[in-house]
Length: 473
Image 1 (cartoon, helix red, strand yellow):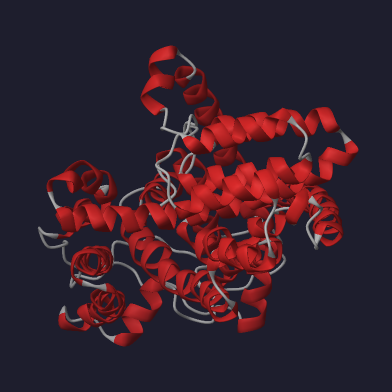
Image 2 (cartoon, rainbow, N blue to C red):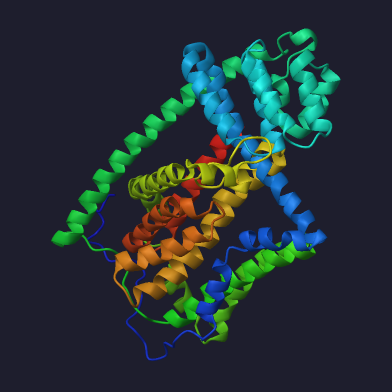
């Protein structure tokens, strides 16, 4: 993280505390807590009591299946490539997939994968037996027929509507190789090679980020450099109210959309941005005060701040690696605990698989897998545009400013990051990894004061992930 401009005064710093500052309203923290309640778990418990709720839960399971299929496609391509390079490793990977598959669509996809890799293998029949554990319907019957005798192109097209890419794995009549076998195998090798290069690049970036971070912290400690952010409780209460309104309105909109229709959710997202950014003016803040407090200024210049965000993202990766390691450790520990007979029996589905412990797959992965060009473009705009802009305004802008008026940087960054992570849909196991990323964004706010750098880093992180999924899926 470069600090060659540390001797220059930042363009905009927060003024000293003013007497007009006020405490947050009593409802601010209760509204934050309201947004942190895991409503999906609560709905799963009460859904059987209502046909309407049960129907919505069924839709949610379809969305979950789509995300699981997307992740399974990535794993399937690795399996297909390794089946030629290392057959033993491929079989081990397929065993692992078989133990984790949950849901009729993923189970059907796994049966087609087994049949594609080796139609004569007894593993194919085992996959069909697992699929038969689910209630018989058009999909299970079509996949069973495809595995035993192949499919016509018309039947493949019907399978494609339910399974997407996995329909291309189905063999032709007489169990002849599918028409795209060569392209599928070539693509699998390309994906495997690209993933290897990607992992290598991330590791190198992580090491570089760690070096830059250590150098920056040493310069701060020695007094050679000074962070641009100046802590102050100035208007902190009002900013906490903004943050609470952002979370509360967005959560209320999501709940309304779940029960009353998607239009209410869209209205909720719009109101969750407009109302909180209007609220400070009703509380007596001027635009110049709000802009300075939130970090909505160009710092030392747009391009310089964008460059700081690009370089600073390397440090974000270094910090995130700590959280990712904690997530992996928690996942491994939970997996060991679940390996007992009681846990296995509790997690077993009719098809014989059990959902493994670990982070949930983000719904956007399923949207990319099943969506067309415009859906994917919308996912990219949402992940690399909307989320970096408004999440940074309210988390690193408002909430971090509030905490920094009361605590030192590390406590403020951790608290902000934990709330940031808990609100994401990947579940409790993903909290350490997401919190690590959030701490990295907080460090960029502390370094530059302007939100341009953390917004840039956030956009790089999300944009690269979505672009990678777009290409792979």
